[in-house]
Image (tube, rainbow, N blue to C red; front, side, top):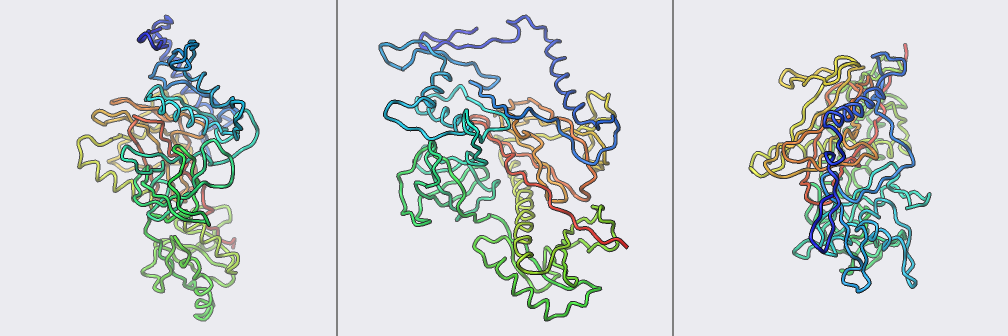
Length: 493
């Protein structure tokens, strides 16, 4: 136990004080890692796998921590400055202040994620920058001590910077572009009625400068709650639109008149405000083609092909999705959803590539090294680093993991690792759902859980690493993930 000044008591128990030998701690960490390896194995112990296996987490559990692993906790006399102040743990006292309303107050329910945000806000209001309260678990969007679930409600908050400008905790990585609009709600209110709206004026990678605006029948107002939660009302994607052309298949009897009718019926795809789709007449200039074959059609990339005589269970048609019904009422929502998801994935890759180039311009920039580890067998404990210079070829059933090392000169970072396969599925590798993102110190490394390569995706695949400075509340971008789009299937002969 370490003592601070007279006003505060710092509580911290190093492992050495518990007389736990270092080698015991090392073995414990290895056992924890091996649990994820065992959980990733096939039930029968074989090496063959058709899906990525990730160790399951306990359900219906949420953990609230007073500090990060590298921070001490604090005790002090509270209420601050009161004659009857008595020693309290800072987290416990703040937690009770938030959850137990005064006699004349009525508090709307909070989610666990919002609770952690409120605790941090009270710390900041009191002039504190540490410790950093953290929350993890599978039910972060559940009502505290309740059963109601509000998915995604706590993701974005609004604050003021040192210059008095409004900012939100979301940017290009979440698809926000200049002109996007967010509804602002009180942080302690579960009402569906927003207090006002803000418009994105200057989107950044992880945060955006916003300004109050008129929207949805509400007048522009500066009376917005600092720390209020935000929800997307309108998204103007900061992304190059995907060019889509319509053409008949080589073996189809579809005539030019049918193609023209279909083009007119799909015009709303491009005319919607904020659309990521642009219709073009020349297939040679298109990023994706809608190839029509009678009453069905396929969405095919520039280099993709329409499947022919392929078994329905096969998934080897890289760059092709379908078949879909040509009927516009069915086709419009399908294309809108699928092309938007493809555009978001490609936009994220482009943003990551641009940021990687910008890193070379500053010696103080954040830098994270990512290494691919391959495990030879179930008994392999350490794995070997894959030489990326020789190209990467992974096969179904391979065991892999990724090691992240903070190579920044000074700063600690909060890392996020996303895997984007050729299906445009974005899967969070670190942190996983319910996993706590931890600050990675200068020169420190972490290895992800062991994953199993599946046989559901063929072709080029991407890994995107996102890192922000670890000098504030934890930043976790795993919410960017999106599920796999269904691949095209052919008809049996």
